[in-house]
Length: 426
Image (cartoon, rainbow, N blue to C red; front, side, top):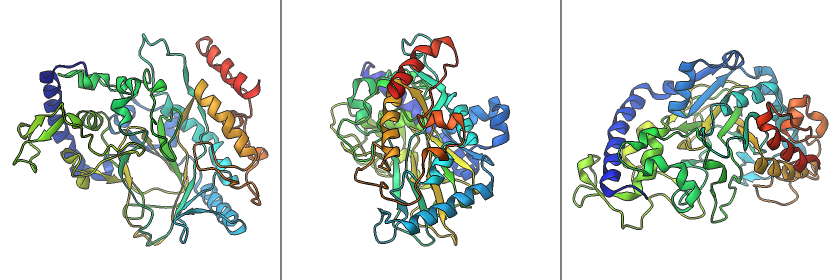
């Protein structure tokens, strides 16, 4: 840390002030605080107001990208695929999350022009600092496919639960020198934390997010996590919960290990009752080899019981995306009457490292194997009716899945594109 103790204390007090205001806003507005954007606006270009809301919350719902009938046909096809093959998933005796990566519906969705257009729009909110030597190392205008699984959560389920967490490492945020620089403005103390830009990829592209071989850890630059819905789902129906404040919550998370409550004031959230603790070994909620976890005890000022809001009503074909630093969870119980089903499809940009992963992923896909970041085994290699190359119906879809060369959008990106194409096509 390069800040003085006084500077860190000033930053902490400033974050707590901002946090108190934002927490009250979220409690009042609930799920309506999450930006909701029709796909037609994505096509026309997001307004400044929409972009500001997405940047502030770190989450967005995009409605109407895929016709409902088409999305429902994907789910029907998946059900047939499950019935025809010995699928695995969690929990084994009543599967809610399926270890399926290569079914036809997933391929159709990943290569769908509307999904790729949405991902492009969201990726282009990211950037590099003007002086960064790496500013041409990522092409945010070119999304690539990152294979993940799918969920069909049945009514009454209580087994598929995820508590509040942030993916992409835990103690690595402080331990890895490059990852730590992502949050340099926060750690600089005083009021510098207000300059933190969670959409600046300058240091993030080389950050080591996994120093402890965490299971199912994403190994590439995944700017937005996301899913596409295959059902009508609302609050209390087993859906996603998010903490819709990006910069402030991140600043709090990064500064939290350096403060502790005063003796006798453990329940107080007042800044005066929290003291600097630079010598303590605790990193609350950070366990090597796991994602960053948060709860009312480890991060009390977030008031997660009140501020984790459920995503509002979603229809088949709608998309939800959340920034890679956003705190999120899954509702503990599905109290609805219909399934809560999604395809996990994030927004991932083209880079040399991501292209190398795409090359391995393409090989696995052709053999029906799980994606490289996930547990191995024979996967779907013997399954009937799995997705094939011919199911990719567009050139941009073939590019996203690594079957067609990329084209540089401008001269500045030509070196990146040439290197990526060389990895993929020799």
